Amino acid sequence: MVESQPDTELLQQLRELLGETGLRIQPDDVIPDVVLRPQTTEQVSAILRLCSAAGQAVVPLGGKTGLANGHIQTRGEFGLSLERMSAIEEIDASNRTMTVQAGCILQVAVEAATEQDLLLPLDFGARGSATLGGIAATNAGGNRVIRYGMAREVILGLEVVLADGTVISSLNKMLKNNTGYDIKQWFIGAEGTLGVITRLVLRLRPNPRSENTALLAVDSFDALTGLLRWLDARTAGTLSGFEVMWPEFYEYITREGSLHKPPLPHGSAFYVLVETLGSEPESDAERFETVLGQAMEEGLIADAVLAHSQSERNALWEIRDDVLEFFKLGPIIPFDVSVTLDRMEDFVADIRAGMDAVQDAICIVFGHLGDCNLHLILGAKDHGNFDHDALSTLLYETVQRHEGSVSAEHGIGITKREQLCRSRSEAELQLMMAMKKMLDPKNILNPNKIFAAETLAAG
Ligand code: ZN
Image (tube, rainbow, N blue to C red; front, side, top):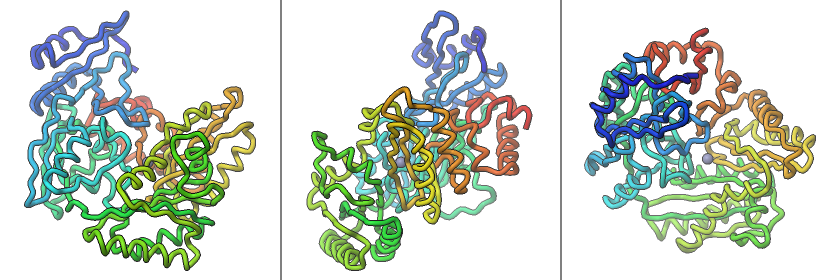
């Protein structure tokens, strides 16, 4: 870890480049906390050229909403915030694209698209503070991945600044473009370790005209996966949400005295929030009801409640989104992992069996089942029974045993660095490290994220 006084000559050069407002320095008793705030790609390029020459580590900063600590700035490292590069440069309605600067907040971009009657389909809880640069750097997922894919599928082009200051402008607008390596994909999900994303071209979709939402109770895991296939096959590609809550989730969020009334009674094995986005309000609603009715006849659904208004829709989503409520239970750790559907039931059973050893265990499971993505909240109601390392080990060993992914949508950052080898082969890790060394030979870009500096040096 870097822990030394910043180079005063470098700071002076950066001050001249960015001006007083472009540099935020929080004096500290030992080492000041420096955040650089460029306004243009040229300034980002000049910053990286200077920092590269000085061997100064730089941590790109977005909305800092990631859960893997990919944005953590160790003392002595400079933050590089793109907050002053937040413009929406263009909405191209004929090509259905949007060009934005990396500091643009997701919600601002979504609203701008809606004004043009278009849809930017990225959506998740941190929409009000997450930036599009950060979303690209972490390949964020969220609630509509089943329909529109993760950030990777929404990004058509990128502009990136490399560690040595080289600007790679790859602002492609075309869906098909097979001209050699797809350079943008190297940087999407790389968590700022290979380059700093400065601008993006996003793919927009037609704004949906209809939205149908229901909460369903399901009796078994087999019925759950059967229901997913059933709905996917009969809703003509419009299925946009299949959010599953295990009973501990649903029953706690809708417990007596909580803000949320239970739309369905407690006691079922699973609760699923399903949503379709379509183009024909009347016939879509009819079709949605018919398909759910048929699924009920098939025994795939035990009980159902349909939303008939926007406020009813919101009330159903609020149950699924109220994850912060679990922090009231006691010390907990939230996990974000993937396992394939055929392994998922056994995976959860194995975690539960492991939790039997923990007194007053908390084990909450929910997730984006259509994406194989589970979120687990593990803990113990009593602080004395909470063992962070033991719970992490239990979780990640079980993921590895079921050949899953230690990170589904939140990246590796610092938090999951030691777990990476559970989901990636030695050959994959070596290739990743070779790319890192090629693009950032001095390891100045977000060092110690994904790979520890010692691991890179030894690899
Ligand atoms: Zn999620």
